[in-house]
Image (tube, helix red, strand yellow):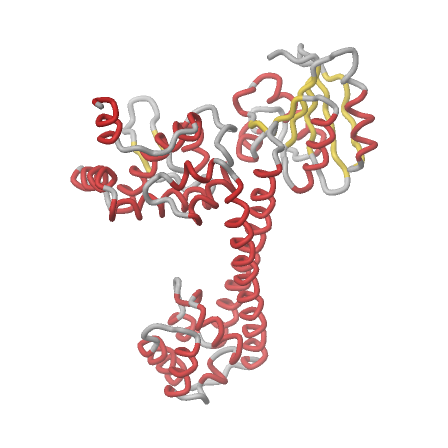
Length: 402
């Protein structure tokens, strides 16, 4: 669709910068505006007149960009958003290396005028989808804060007893009883005084399974270090504070999950998702929070790319082509699709057959599950578009024969 004006808005916390282009790409306006409804209405009102068609593009449709989207939609403009990755890639083709609000607003407007396929829709404002997405944003903030607390604990423990921190490597430090232990005692200095029996009782009071090997490794690491590190007790005080904060973040995330699980009961697409083998309420909630009803995506390939399920291909001329795992994409959506696909292998015959075929082709376990997730995503996308529940091919054939 051709628009009379394209308005690119680089949104900010207190101020935005808007760039307006006409159909020929000429800059009509470049202006900083306040993050106020009146300022936004004044800007859009200059161009939404006499039945003029206007496209407004933002770089952030949520949080700080939500007011801009709401005002533009209320005034009758079409609204799209330019994803961050596309924004960064498009910036490279424009003259100059500077990063300014003026330049960013122009890049956004230019993309809307010349590269419409790079844009995503934000036309849907149904509350039933907005609420889970708002909660998803809160959950992502909590997840980042939790990761910061874990990293702070690791850094402090490495400085006081590296061997002790090594025992808690990988996922070990994320176990609930470990976090409770660090929240109460901080680290090696106080844990040394407790003894194995009391440590085991403490772990089991927090529902730990077979904690003895970990406790033995922790005590061995503590007793192996004979020198004292200056300031260790104060560093471990910080560990205890960080552990308490991390536990609080986990509780908050549980509250968010409970709210989302309650909300999705009112979303019609939930029944469609739950009909797919392997998808339970939690996976369905993750998919709805991150992809909505999938109408933002023109086809399953675009959704797969967004989820990070498309392989990364490296090829130049006649050089050897290689396909490597895609590390990009929405990690929450990718995890939901991966976990549900993995679950389907255990009790869904067609999924198990596809997985085993990929293993026989030489793919490792994770790669085979990713391939299955990608195949299932095609089916899931078609189901969401048609509004139909999942049916196996054998069931469809039986129904057709009848």
